[in-house]
Amino acid sequence: LLTVGALLVVDTPNSLIERGRLEEGKAVLKKIRGTDNIEPEFLELVEASRVAKEVKHPFRNLLKRRNRPQIVISIALQIFQQFTGINAIMFYAPVLFSTVGFGNDAALYSAVITGAVNVLSTVVSIYSVDKLGRRLLLLEAGVQMFLSQVVIAIILGIKVKDDSNDLSKGFAVLVVVLVCTFVSSFAWSWGPLGWLIPSETFPLETRSAGQSVTVCVNLLFTFVIAQAFLSMLCHFKFGIFLFFSGWVFI
Picture 1 (cartoon, rainbow, N blue to C red):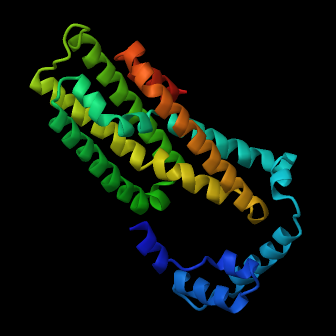
Picture 2 (cartoon, rainbow, N blue to C red; picture 1 turned 180 degrees about the vertical axis):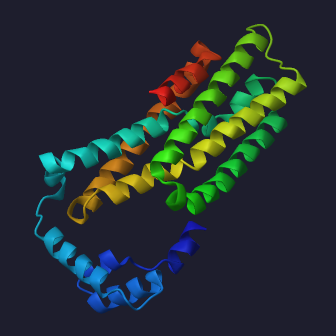
Picture 3 (cartoon, rainbow, N blue to C red; picture 1 turned 180 degrees about the horizontal axis):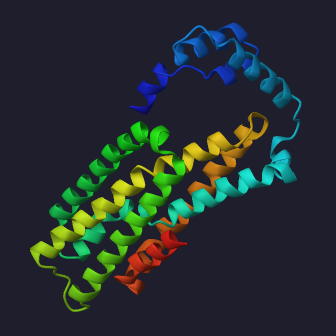
């Protein structure tokens, strides 16, 4: 799907202008704006491209005082995004659901459900992010994720003991609903906005370098969480949800 989709994607106006293909850049800008009245924006992009080309060392430029707020914001977003616990839950949903008493098949079905919720909730973000704003979505979702994880921890702490991993059917379904509630709130906030906000924050002359640092930090902490999760689950048990909810609170 990614490969087929890539065949349909056009280069951005910024990219075309930076490579000297001004007329193509103007044509793409008209297409994505849906109007022929794009001359002021086009001239701004041309000027920004000229300034960007004067920057010889974009990574070194990132460390300059005026660029530090953007790099701090983008790195912090990626770290906190991973420490919400989303990848731990998405990677290990079958393990998690098996642990609380689902059979293997049921655990896989539950993982599919959380994946579907993730996709559908991302669509919510696409249609609401420009109307509601970035900050409101991040704050609302933070509250929703925090409460979901705390309630899951309480249920598992009371109902699941070391000598028994069986929840009653009602509590098991409630845990799935709460996990879906957590996943949905992440998918319309910290998930997509973790990528959107840095792309809007960096100026053109450091955007490519800044985004590469953003992706690097994200994948590094994805790796850390993936490696640590099973050990954390064994040692923390239900407390793993309190661990991640603490990071959400921060």
